[in-house]
Length: 500
Image (cartoon, helix red, strand yellow):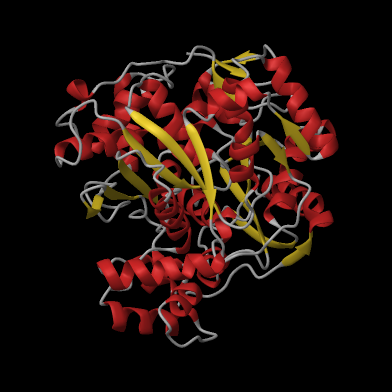
């Protein structure tokens, strides 16, 4: 399996795509020939999460042997990295609704499911490519990717990682997780700006000949841990496949029965993995893209117009505070029937005008598989309150957005009677101020005080990763102007070179 760019006929090996992240023309890597209809319940029944991951990844990372893949998967998914041996357990709300819990990893977010495996994939790719430069992972985060990437790559030999996050755009707990990160090869900085600013800058770094030449002279190669990298994206397909197997095993649906999936969506990587699972044979009906007030994606699925020329909102679901969804380009590649020139033009339109649109026929086709919906902050908190008081289940604000969109669809008769799965993307304890407000508990400047109150009311114990965090010292408290990000990266490059 080779990978091609979404914008041209550039074609590379999986190991090259893993190392470099972004295509030379600025496009994203997609499979040269997508493996369609290759998975079935009969072949997957009775398999563990690890075995399902191998069944999925064997179609994409063909540069590794089956034994190599299995060893990497075993290292990524075990009782040291995930608190539940099922990796992605299902919670049933009622007969027609299940919640896939993606937050049982080391940092309590769905990003752990890919970023526990990605360091092994990258290290193996580096060896395969005979790459002797140090890798510098550059990552922008809207909250969860940063900590999961830092945790995955800390102290990995030959690899360094630098994370940028919006200073006022993450939860207090997400900020503490990053500021207190351990490891001798990590660097974290807040920026005065939003996630889109950080993400756009890093994309310019990856495509800057000047910056790359400077890094190369210092013996450093840039790579990415955002979901633009295939090592982040394709491991996520596995949890949609395992969810389907669990639904059948639990009797929620029968073999081959169609079910819908609602995904709280910001950067479009999570829901894109669901789309890929569907292409591989999982009987997903509709993929519902759930947005907060930054509803550029929900509007697109309604109108066919992607328009970034709008106000940016800082919301109670910060990981979705995004207007430029980086993985959306991969989706457009398939909307365009793999026409790279068309995708390149759409991306040019977005860059130059902040806006692009698909045709009426293209919109009609994509709406057979995708729909969008959104709710605001007040509705999000009301959903958290409702689900906790009616079902005794505590949602984080992102999952609450998905739940609220699902409630609205049900009221409008849009769910067509199919079983629905909500992808729960984070543990609620990562967002104590929002949870306290939703449950009418006192606010505090100390997030750990709020968590103690939430725990005393709900009986949900403080997860060990957060309990351990409380007494750790802050290591990274810098906040810089977004215009200084290049200087910060080059300074870290110098520091890496100085080690040698």
